[in-house]
Image 1 (cartoon, rainbow, N blue to C red):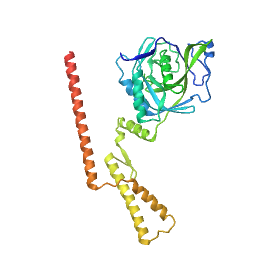
Image 2: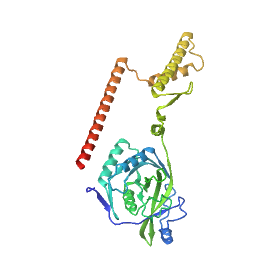
Image 3: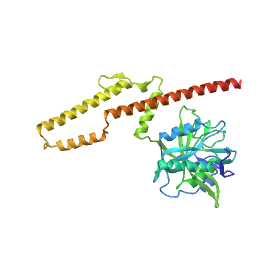
Image 4: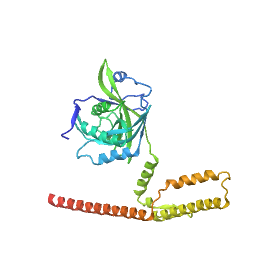
Length: 345
């Protein structure tokens, strides 16, 4: 963390609104101070946040790999804005250090990672930042959170101010509760507004906004597969044959799928042969059906059998090589751990 450049030192208090509709304020804030909060800037202020599963998995992976003794991890959120809706599609970790009321953020690292991500997807922009929850100190104002963790810390104000300079609009703060008190991972989204009294900013007010998890078709398939694979009964490897409702493994399922595909191809071929034999090109629907068949056939690439066999063999060899190298790496790691344990004694 020696290369981290702190954007500022000192601490602005971070206040938290418990209610999502903004009707009540945190018990740690004085009513007069809340009345001095800057009102909403425009009607397009963010009120809904959509989070993709990839973001949650990336945050949890970052939390799992955090340095020993680190209280929480932070990172940059990428996505897009559409009026009062923010959709978070990706994220990346950013190194930081918190020492009391001081915060240091890897600004250069954040800038380089953002440039690399934008090269892959230019449509994404910085929409905010994420953080994992902190252990509760017993006097947290976040009464809606789990008792063993808190979502907002005083240093959150400083980090939020840094990302306010990185975003085109007001940043969103996403908090992932990793305490697992209720065997669940809670997600919360916040927006912030400065609390101003007599022209002087005293604190930042974090207001929780509506959040939901959204998955695309490909993400839903992957998540379902991961859930089924983690099942203790191994249900991820069991499929059902619709013909007789019997359970089949993946190899048999592939065989059934190929047999169904071959049957459809034979049906299509018989239809074409019948049209040619009867010369019934002018019948209603024949021309349209012919065009659909042609479009379907054009989607399939034309590959010579010998070229396909060579591609398959090459891919199989690459897969076997990767499997072999991964097994060697695992063996070396096990040996290294045992040697370190022996030398430590």
